[in-house]
Length: 408
Image (tube, rainbow, N blue to C red; front, side, top):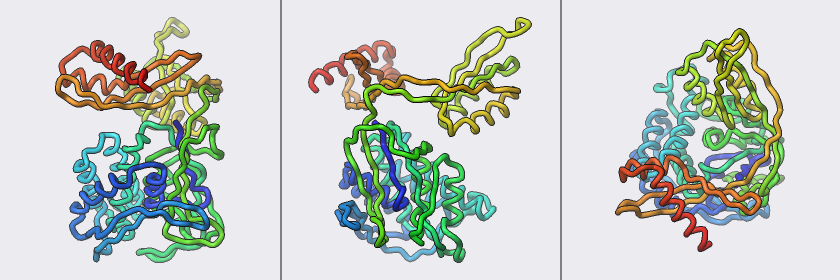
């Protein structure tokens, strides 16, 4: 599957993103009940009402957040909001991926304020972001993404509209986009653009959630078969356009071709520890794959060939890492066409020897042959919990998957 976030016209805010995910299919009752449970982590604020409703925005039926709160506070320390978010994720028993995502969102917001004001992250105080709104947006989006299983999907983003004019906040008036928004996007690969709205269209909270959902920027919609569309309404109204964030979910064609960059370099004086660290670091910033091969070069010297597959926008970042971490004096860069076999993500619950497990697997089909790939972490978890060999666990799960697929 592929998810396209489309903020080209109306930009993005935290509540618009949350609403678009509900409109896309996330269970609003689960989100409402989840948020009601976590209000206690910001004791100076109270959620009196939270709900989602359908609304017309310039002729577009979309989903709007109804949030009524009672709070009398003008600032909070960033660490207070962060702790509330972490406690909320723990309270709701969401996955490690969900926790990492939510924590990264608030970290992006805190880090941007820290760099703008030249203070430590522990000293950051929020003003506009001090409201419980921030907690609702970040945790609500996290719940929605978890339930829709979006953390496993490919998410891309079209250019983000930031508006124009000026914006007034606790530190006075400045040109739009505000410094916090610029700082957040500075550390991403996403593209921003202005328009003549003369308003702030992208908020810091919306920006920090977006850059942690995806770092894949596209200029046009990818080739896809559309399965569902979500429209999330913003609070403002504009005469010339619908203040709506659009999210589109679909699937790639069964097979296709794309083009990737291959970066290669030979190193003969780098330790195994550094190479292991290099793999982790380069994969973390978004490389598609990395391989290291032993070999022999001139004068019989043993060497390691580092080969990295990535998109165009990752080249500069990865070459910087290669040079700085290995000291290499040259990197070969080439284009490579790639055959893509489409795959879909699936999951099911299973009770095994009295214990419940959630099993995730990928399914691919090519020339009428179907293949299943079970997530290794799930195999490892069951193996360790039940003290069984991974091979035995995998054999058992494959039989269960075959039974499930036969009934579909």
